[in-house]
Amino acid sequence: MVDLLIQVAALLTCAAFFLALYRFLKGPSVSDRVVAFDVLTIIAVTAIVQIAYAEGRGIYLDVALVYALLSFLGVIVVARYLERGL
Image (cartoon, rainbow, N blue to C red; front, side, top):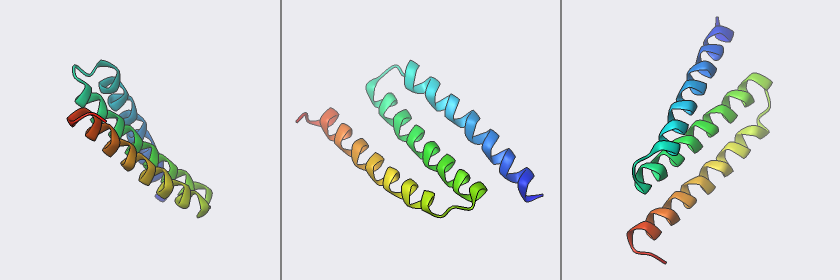
């Protein structure tokens, strides 16, 4: 039963990734693309956590945490640049 739920979560993650990728590529404004990029990184972190659970390797959780922190900082930098410029 748990394996089925993991597979369903992986399919939903893939669907969310492609929807966010569409918004990233077709976003009418730069701010839409920044938000879509943030969503893509959140989905990537989710995928890394799912892989860590499936493989039973806790080290991937550290990778996911570092990736999430770098993604957050990147989005903050881009948002400040769009707001005021560097």
